[in-house]
Amino acid sequence: MNCFQAEIEAGHVIVDGELKPRGDLVLLAHGAGTGMDHDFMVAVAKGLADKGLCVVRFNFPYMQKRTEDGKRRPPDRAPKLLEFFGHVVMLATESGAGRIWLVGKSMGSRMAAILAGDEAYSGRVAGVVCLGYPFMPIKRKDVEVEPRLEPLQQAKVPVLVLQGERDSFGSFTQANGWQLGQNISIKPIPDGDHSFVPRKSSATTATANLVLAVDYCVEFFGERHA
Image 1: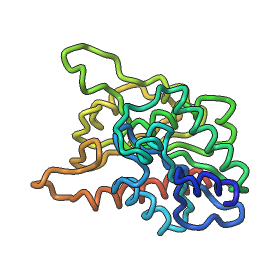
Image 2: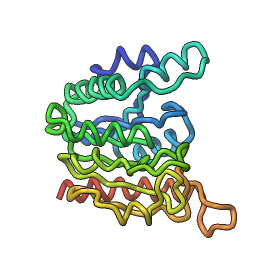
Image 3: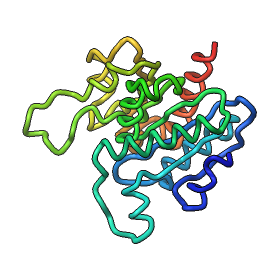
Image 4: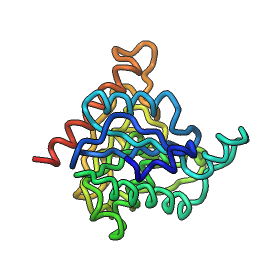
């Protein structure tokens, strides 16, 4: 993983697990409000690493600055986010990995889907997993808006969407009724909100839902290898 060394030393990247020769490499992108060290990100990364996968977590530039000075910032605009994500994909390509998977939480999943539709990167990527895709902007409930389907519809590689049944950015039931695209599959996270957390009265737990999400990822990776 020498290709990531500079980013690791700068504190922009964390590697979980060991990259085996020609093995699978997962690039895990965070959501808008929390970085690569958030509990959700750690749980997914550790869960995948425990399954034998190598996972690279990284912070987008605005989150790197927040980590350095503690000041909260809004996310960078999409072009800057995509530029850094593309940089990480190129580093992953240089790592000697066999297959590269893009996995993202919320905003990170949208950026992953957009990269999967870009010919400059789609040939380097085996597939994408969206952990709570932000279909709808929740701050505009008084305005009728169209769901953000274009990144999914234009993806050139297989995409798995894991969507909470109570996700305020678009529930599983809502999303399952939209035309997502022929490369897209979608699975529900039981009673989960946007972070897969169920209600206290639910028959499941946040921990169980994250374990389920990791299992779905591993299953998806395996199916795409067959």
